[in-house]
Length: 163
Image (cartoon, rainbow, N blue to C red):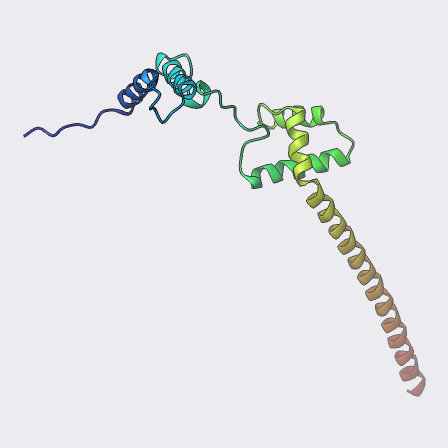
């Protein structure tokens, strides 16, 4: 006994397009305008005029750089470091392209940078504060060491005087 195969997705899509193009009765649950829109989009896709259904339906991808937030954040950090040295977005794009990151335009780079700017500035401030704290600790330690050395020298002097 032969198993009945399910119709392919393309044939089902084609059938849906035909069905939608026939929708014209007042009893239809779909408006004629929407049915014609969907049927035309499906025809465009099936005829090969569009590479994807999204394109056939006129759906545009979101603006901005695609990718995971970690990737965009890393790119923003690189941009932040380079912007602090006075480089323009175009120069940074050129350098990124040389490093192997293709199709980066200054506008997208700027938007990605601005997305994380507040966080990057905060990180800079925290790093600056920690640098100051370490510097002050080193200075305090140095003063303590100097006073300890002075005290040790005074003890040595007293020991020499007593012997």
